[in-house]
Each structure stands twice: as structure tokens, then as C-alpha cells.
Image (cartoon, rainbow over all chains, first blue to last red; front, side, top):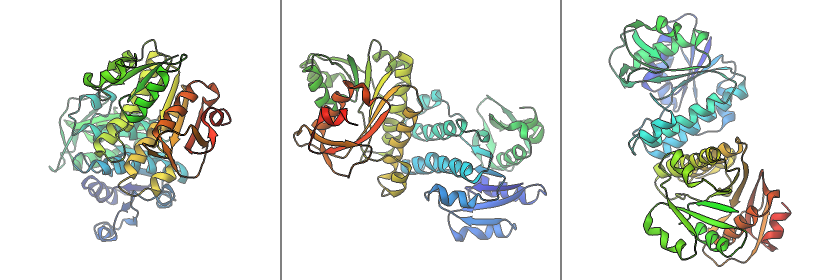
Amino acid sequence: MRVLVVGANGQIGKHLITIMQNNSSLEAKAMIRKQEQAAFFENLNAETEVVDLEQDIETIAKAAEGIDAIVFTAGSGPHTGKDKTIMVDLDGAVKTIEAAKSAGVKRFIMISSFDTRREAIQAAPSSFAPYVAAKHYADEWLKRTDLDYTIIHPGALTNDQGTGNVKAATEVERGEVPREDVASVIAASLENDSTIGKEFQVVTGTTPIKEAISSL
Amino acid sequence: MRVLVVGANGQIGKHLITIMQNNSSLEAKAMIRKQEQAAFFENLNAETEVVDLEQDIETIAKAAEGIDAIVFTAGSGPHTGKDKTIMVDLDGAVKTIEAAKSAGVKRFIMISSFDTRREAIQAAPSSFAPYVAAKHYADEWLKRTDLDYTIIHPGALTNDQGTGNVKAATEVERGEVPREDVASVIAASLENDSTIGKEFQVVTGTTPIKEAISSL
């Protein structure tokens, strides 16, 4: 399966591509913003393509040609300028979804934030609410398509080494999760079509990742 | 017809309520953010209700009870913080649309910006693009409902006195338009059901407003 990773140069993206390039059934293509970012992926024998998410749908669709699945893990994060929140977390996501449709890529995995429901926008502190809103509308856009989507809602991301064990369900208690484990959850979701049409929260837990994903 | 004006305290809102209170078939209810803003509308014998657009859908829906049409003319404008762009121009608009559905108000008039198409987001200078994107997604959300909507795309707004004459069509050449004339266009649209399901651009022109609206 050839997988385009949008936001490859982020920390989850780098873990994911490392995992995929060590997995015989998954083959990564890294979509990166700058040519300088390519060396990391070339060292893993992963293909790269330089596209800025602020470019148009056609440009993103070209990067998605011949691809079987797209993972959207680009993100300005809650602490960048709110202009980027709109242009990357919302509009960049929507353009990637539209590019998937245009390129005929059915499978789409969205890395969302922990809780993007309407209630979470209302409950968020005012500095965080715009980020939650942007992720909410991106998720809503995806759910209204007929793509084979999976929406992953990770807990608070850490740089700890992955444990290989998580708790995953529609709703779990808020907690932390290493970025490396989130990357493994993405890879496991790509390999398990029972995750199609589902969204789930994931935090560190006691169940091996493939098993946790299988029993969603 | 009882009309809830969301963003009543803005300049278009004030013109609109003045026009409506001098028109026997339209009766305005001003939704305002602060009690201190009420005096202007009380002097026009218009009802007021204090609701902040950052409150939840239920609170907005309560203000819409017994109402026949909603006009959304709230807006942070392109020059406010981008957090407000997400929370007012996009999320505030979507919550108002959802409140209309929840309160059973079918008629909805959206004051958008001049061009909110995908191409306009791509073409906008980077400081302006987040505002265009927010308006784009709000308009898209409205078009995907079964509300009786009209989306008005005014040209560059001025504080000049209204001329009473405009040019209105799906696409017109970019130009200016006084806020007072935009308010008259809204009132004319409320009184003309042929505008339901339509969106149009409007700038200063040579056709009397009611006639311009009738021939859309």
C-alpha cells in the first residue's frame, strides 16, 4: 500500500514513515514543505514531494497520484498563530481531502485532536478554542465525504518512547500518549479496514496496539 | 415579519434596523453583545436581546424563538485577531445557522464578503486569506442546510450615504458599496422570496435596489 503522509516532517510523521519503511506492506511517500527536509526521508528510502499546504488542491492532488491512502498529520498545533490555525489545520486539511477525492484516493486517515465535538469548542479556554474549532470543521468536512476515513483523536502528545500499548475507544479518559505510539496506531489503522468510517480517542494503556485497533 | 439581526450593533446592523423600524412589514429584534449597546435600538422601538456569539447554540436559539428570519451581519472584519476570525466569522455563523434550524426559523440571510470561493482564498494576500477562508466555510455550511438562505457578497464597504442604486448579480466587477445600501439590499431581500437559494455580489450601480433584487 502506497501512503502519502501529509505533514511528514512533523514528529508523528517522522515516526510513521520510519515504521512504514520497516514494514513490507506499507510504502511511504513524504509530503514536505521544503527541499531541505528531504534528507531524513531519503535515508529511509522513502519518496518525497515538496508541496506547501497553502498551495492549491490540484498541486496536492498531483502528489497523491498513484497513492492508495493519505494520512493527514500536518498541524500548526494549538500554539502557533491563529492565521495558521485556519490556513493549515482547517483549510490545509480540507484541501487535502478534496485532493484525495480528485486523485481517486479513497482511504484517508485524519490525525485530529483529543476532543473536537461542538461541546469541546464551547468548553475550551479562549486561547485554545480556535484550534479546537478548526479541527472540528476539518473533521466535519471529512465525515461528510464518501471517503473511507478514520479519525484518530490522540490524548496529550509526549515525546516519550512508545510503549506499544494503548487504550482506544470512542471515548476514553483524558491522558497522555507518546507520538511514537500514535504513529503505530496510524500504521495499524492503515492495515485494518475495520477502522473505516470510525473515529476514536487513544491514550497510553495496556492493550497491544494492533489488538486495541482490532477491537474498536 | 419578525427579523433577528445578529451583529445588530455593527454599522450595517444599525442601518438595517433603522430601515426595518421605518417599514411597516418588517419588525427588528437586535441581538447585541452588551446591555450598554441597547439604547440605540430602544430609541427605534426595536426589541433587543443580549447574547454573545461565543455562547452556545441553545442560547442563540432562545433569542430566535418566535422569529421569522435571521440576518447574520456579525463580523470581526478582516483586521481583527485571527482568533476572532475563527470564533465569530466562522463558528459564530455556524452556531447561528444551527440555532435557526433548532428554533425552526427557515429564512436566513448571510452577509458574506465579496468573493468567498476557493479560488479567492488561494488568491488572497496571506494577511487576508484566513478571513476569506472563514467566510468560505460559513457560506458552505449554510448552503448545505435546507434553510431558505440568501448569501449577499458586498463589495468594499464605505460609510458614504446610500445612493439607493446598486448593481447586483452572481458576478459583478469589484467596486465599492455604502453600508447603508447593503442594509437596504438586505431589507429588499427579506421582502422578496425570489432571492431564496441565491447568492449574489453587490456594488454601487444605477439600478434602484428593489428592482436590482427582483431581477437576480
